[in-house]
Figure 1 (cartoon, rainbow, N blue to C red):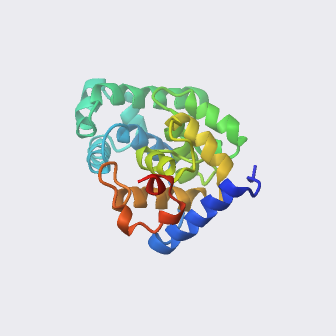
Figure 2: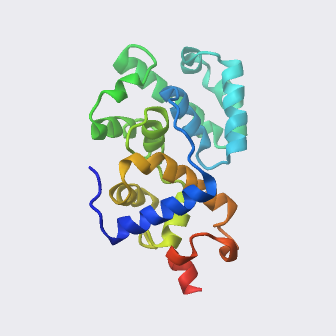
Length: 223
């Protein structure tokens, strides 16, 4: 449902335009939903470099999802060790692939494109190790569906800006930001919030003096 125009949404739109002028508009391209799911599980509590190393090792040693599903768990743990928490992540990946196989007869998540959005989200959330962020990433990044992922950068930046209350949990932030931002902007806004969090709005020592969002930032106004 498209949010009504209100002061909060107007503020979000101003911020979107400023971020757009700063970082541009990244085009959306469809991705393999299964690869997106596995990569996002690997990304939990680690950085992109370690995630990518683990994903490349996984694909190098087990070139198909069927091989990943059926591999000895110990071998899979070793393959994804660069991502950290490998003894937890490897079994979760296999459990998810087995669940997909059992329900769909093959390892594919393409069916999620045809489900009502909330049904698709609930199905993903029922998988082991899948929370709101992982579900939203699969829906938005792989399938182009209107879900708004909230990672650590998005959570920090939107709280500092005052787009969501300061004490909002990351789980609740998904819901609030989906209500606040027009769905057609989810992808670009999400990408640019991350870019801004990495470039300017650091967890420690944010570079407020050179931030283009000063006029709309609650954190800057309070300092």
